[in-house]
Image (tube, rainbow, N blue to C red; front, side, top):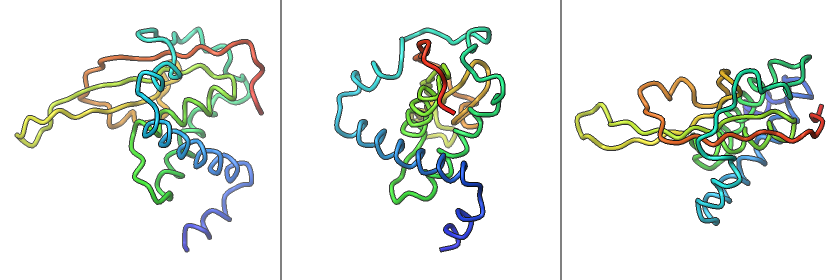
Length: 160
């Protein structure tokens, strides 16, 4: 129950963001479980595109830290949900939350060989906004990027 006490200490805006992240994570997990991956990938954006730094004009100028806050909320919610939600559902949830706010992002997929000598293939997904990392960036070191799905946002005004 310590998590409940911590939850009450954060600001109201951060509470709502964490709650939205929890719902987005559960929806992402359900999508990955129930839908063919090609449908999930189609929703992630255009294959092999890259959101260039100058193209992130939809980022609200007063809120440059918003992608980081979304990433924080998703990681925090994933830690406290009763499911094991790793990098892919976290990246999908954060991408959906950023799209709602009018922020373009890129979902990256990578592979690496395990370092324990077993030569197993490891997979990882991470999310960026321009060059700013949102989800999974520290773990992406050592992974070779296989695909990226860029998602440009239409002219819809960002949600505040």
